[in-house]
Length: 308
Length: 169
Image 1 (tube, rainbow over the protein chains, first blue to last red):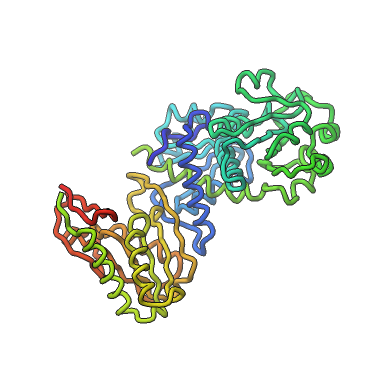
Image 2: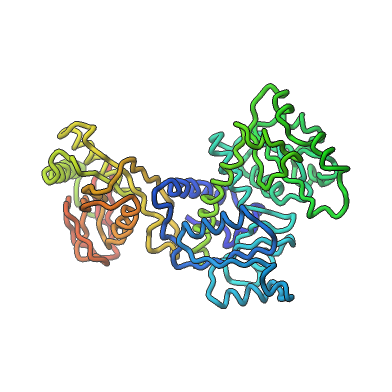
């Protein structure tokens, strides 16, 4: 049993079989996480560096916990408190770290393609933990795992991805993954936050009225408004965004059906998602976080020997 | 290919193993049976079936243990994981591990590591259908043996529950 790739750079270059192997291994690890001893010795001879050039709570802690649950040794790197702040290049930084006998690199970077660049220049296995506006593969995998857990299968599942599609690496990874697994996708949000040619480029349906999207879907994956990536105003105010595109309980009640609510976090409460929806019975947001550890354990475990 | 045990012999052997385990652990009061995934399950399922003829069903604590994440060759190759299903405590119990073929002993070494993550048993015994003698890489010996055989390292023992046990190579 083997993945078709040495690195996890994105969902784009995974096969359907790869995704199935990762999800089924993740379900084995989820069982491990329910035991009194939530730990296995699989990666006890592996050292992993978490290289975070961008802020993160969930992803970094989730990776670190996954590494510890696999008994790997871990190193943490935060760009703000490192020599990257003195101007050391990415490649120099990584080569220096690797010379200390590190086997795998988990990297988040604000530049799209940064992990792909690294993969061409270093021998270690690389796991992309989010690169700019390109991909966030482990988030898409844990989203898929959570949906599969709830619905049994992704085949034919109707998923609406709602909000800031333009700046979202979660959206792109989710679209690639759901399409490979046979789900149906609608992306919804204001025209300024949806890339103009997305329906031609990725073969997804676009909906500018979010009520229509919600009425159609089984699952709504609501994305964060990423103000830090918007160089110019793309909507008039957060308040107005909430009124036109926010998911509120009142809106959900008007649908006459139950839909499952997901969000990759961090939530802007009262902007893209209202608090009563985020904390409501149909929200699986905290299940997503729980499943994240098992999914990342599966990815690290499956990539740990691919060099050999 | 040489047949070691025919289908009928396997059935008799399994029956004998069940009785030997039962003889040593009368009433099974403090004893649990654990089959090793994936192939040990075929043997342990049958041993448990035999035991059901010897004692009330609710006396039998039977679990399945997957050792994939405890293997010592993770960096060489990745194996598919199976389900672990142990829905009782093994703390202070006598555990009988059941597998199909004992060869290098590495699987059993991993199984003991995996087992200890579920508690501290008072005693662990090993029951195997086939013991490939003189080929151990770790100091591990079985307590209950269906059939001991002498083999070369390049030979393979196939346990096929439709046809019996065969030696290849």
